[in-house]
Length: 307
Image (tube, rainbow, N blue to C red; front, side, top):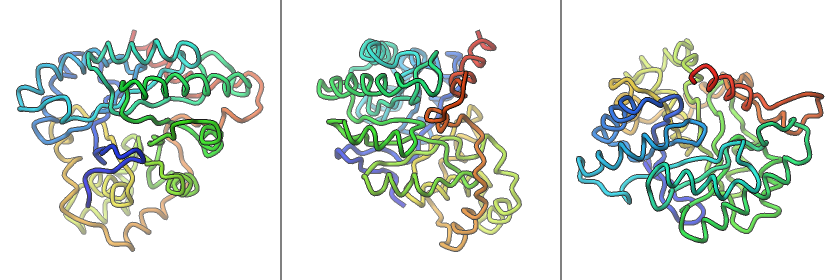
């Protein structure tokens, strides 16, 4: 199984990365990245709304030399916060670079198709998406981003972008797992040479207890998490599982020494029920009064709780 994906602009991207959502404390960030780099992780996923870009940047400044690595040896992904859609996008992008203390980001994504504070049906969301992408294209041309992409976009959002953009998105990051097999979205991405990267590959922990997954884990002498992650990567779908547990960090990436049979991949896919464990971007196109994006509400609640 290939451990890297060639994006549509020729950039090589690891198919396996470490997610960092909700990892904010500097000591925890440092320890987690230290463990990950030692094991062999070379791709790290962050975002402005995670409030850990600065901690990640500081940790990498110390840790890369420790392992004989340089900036070009790792792949860093970050994302534009929903509040920064529009004219604020360029400034926000530059702020992420400053927080990470690096000259360029390997992959930069629009995190959410709507602007924070706007109702889901507000037509201004479309204008903000366009403005944000234009700002990102400018920074891409200036060498600040090696590749551009989007997160939580639907087929409609993607088609809208493809119809108007100068630089095509290279990556779509969405919720994707056996309970949410977005076949049409995957086919659309494949047709348009957009790499699909999954988050919540383990179904926020729910899928590891599925009887079928447990059965296959015993068959392959692997853990349920490894079965789930291999199910994605073997189909060419990138993954970015998050953990601060040393054993799980090591376990998660140890999936390149076995292959699931075609029948087993099909059986895992049959678990599909359309279940989402995270926010639903479909709401951006629905006409419901007073409907704010679930992403915005959940993120707002999270940061109110965390301070």
